[in-house]
Length: 350
Image (tube, rainbow, N blue to C red):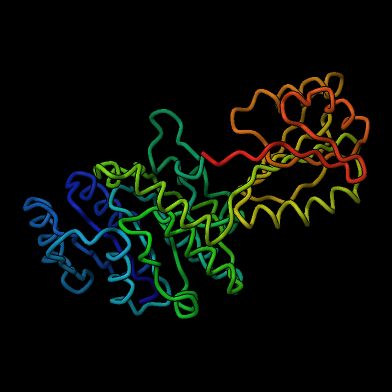
């Protein structure tokens, strides 16, 4: 079997039914399903029994006597797996036609691609109003084989090569019931030389944190896990590059530096003057904006100042622009002309 699909389940009967129905309907690639039942209520447990009975050779059912949390359930499933690929899938998802085939296709494209996410509303691609998953799959088909880089993968649907697990191990259970464990795993894989990417033509719809929202201590645990992650990997920064000129040398520097920073998890914005189409390497954490040429300074400075989540660092290719920013020292801007570098106060990521 090429792929084992691991689905932790804790209640949510209707979502679980939708997930498994879409899985069996829309997955053409041969797979084995490993369901880890985290002490679900009786109706959900009975439904999982029926799925196992109907598919005895294809489905493995692991039962826990208590809710051990998402991470421990995932690790249980991975230990049960022996396939070349392991796909972690939340039970509040629905998969579109060909999703797994496309994810494996992208993973096989390069040896150093270790983790693959599908396109999803979770990653910013929301279906049009009343658009079916079948229609989404047809729309994305033209992107087959294409992918974009990610700073880390999201655990709602996460295809992992076996050799990644062999090199970096299981998910870190220090993150308790869950959140940030997927980013931590991705960073460990990145440190071992593997990329995390998004397969553009694969699509999985996610209801997003339906399980976690039932935990009364979710907000507290989220903040705890965030601090653990930042202590280990560093705080995420928001960084802005401002290009007022068409400068291939500066663009090349940005493509090297900005994408490297984005791969570390930082969020990068690039303001281009006018309709300049300088080639900026694609990355999910890099956002490129073309601002109107006649009012570029005014519009760009206004966009900087009005942000609630302030930029931690701003770089520009024009000293005159920096001097104009000096007029806004009251907003916490300091100008370093020798580097064309502007520094904002440091704000925590919220």
